[in-house]
Length: 156
Image 1 (cartoon, rainbow, N blue to C red):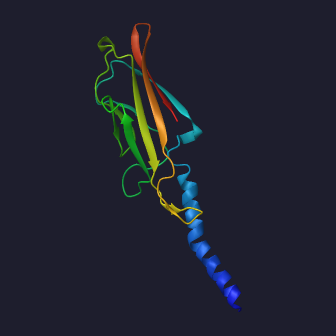
Image 2 (image 1 turned 120 degrees about the horizontal axis):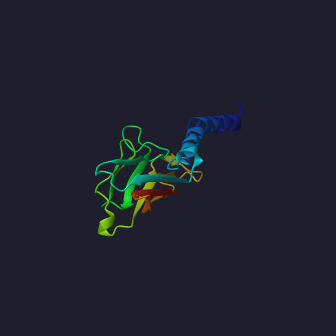
């Protein structure tokens, strides 16, 4: 076997063993942090009298934010005084009661999602975080037949 063929086979072996894995990780990573079912927004309504520590929603974000198989990182950038995030199950939890009489007309919550999968990109440079997706939750209180409730709008 000629030296050129040996080199080509060696390079092909490296590509098959490492290149395809990195491409698979890249394909997996480009879907992380998106909303499930290809949605780009979620609408929820919750009553104004919802109790403190209630689960508002489970964020339908693709990825695992906790544990040995963690592949995304979630962080609340704005609205920490109103909600907290349980990273083990993606639950968004109300931290304080919402009262219309206190003049609170809406709540803005901003959540950052960062993919954590590591791979080598096409230029052979090591890449850890390609992009971040921001989820915007807009909570607005409205009134319907003397029942007050809150609309939650999540948009990517």
